[in-house]
Amino acid sequence: MTTNGYDIIEKKSKRSEKTRKIITYIGLVFWAFIVLFPFYWMILTSVKTYSSYNSEYIPKFFTLSPTIQNYIDAFTAVPLSRYFLNTLFFAIVTTAAMLIVIILSAFAFARLEFKGRNLLFSFFLSLMMIPNELVIITNFVTITNLGLRNTFTGLILPSITSVFYIYLLKENFEQIPEELYKAAKVDGTSDFKYLMKVMIPICQPTIVTITILKVIECWNSYVWPRLITDNEAYFLVSNGIQAIRENGFGRENIPAMMAAVVVISVPLVILFLIFHKKIMAGVSRGGTKG
Image (cartoon, rainbow, N blue to C red; front, side, top):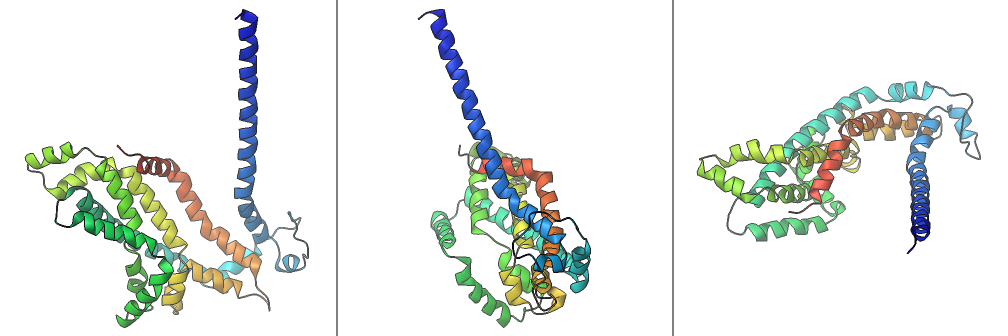
């Protein structure tokens, strides 16, 4: 083939590559618009006045008279600050307790030898097939019979374990060469010390990912807090959003509710921005075997 022929093929290849990149970027921009538009709409609604929002028969995609009154209403209509503190306490304690449970459980399934280990783990995995909605009534009856309604203990207990997180962490623990464990045992290292000094540091990205996902789960928890608490002293931010929504002037106060949602979402956004690299590393490590 002549030099001109190679040049033509190279030009076509470059043109084809450029076309693919353009199509890819267009697709990414379109997808970003779809993902980010609800956030834009939430913020836009939060700065519209109550009267202007309710007078819009056709929703407007901008406003010429933004207001912060909805943010003031969000904190005055209900004790949102106290709900924030309740949610923060609930998320921290629940996540800490869950980490203890799943780390010890994952280590036991990954490294300890005991009779019926595989059968028990298969049983645990089968629990993932059961929707949470099917066990929520059982949890409610159990917590009520224990006299733990309207308590933080009742809120926290059903959420301190997760079969999926145990499975995810077990898979990560098993990627660590077993020779390290055997060598540590020969040196007289206890199982707990090996777990703390070797396995947890190596699997830190996955543990950080699990921690953040659990905090987000607790922060967004709605059904269980609504079911187990009717005392405002134990309400979470999800209860507060519903209370604001019902606190309109004869109608639903959607702008104030959106303002509360913006305020509540800020900590989660900041959390993700700070730890997004570790989240990506944890997810990619969890999807790698060997």
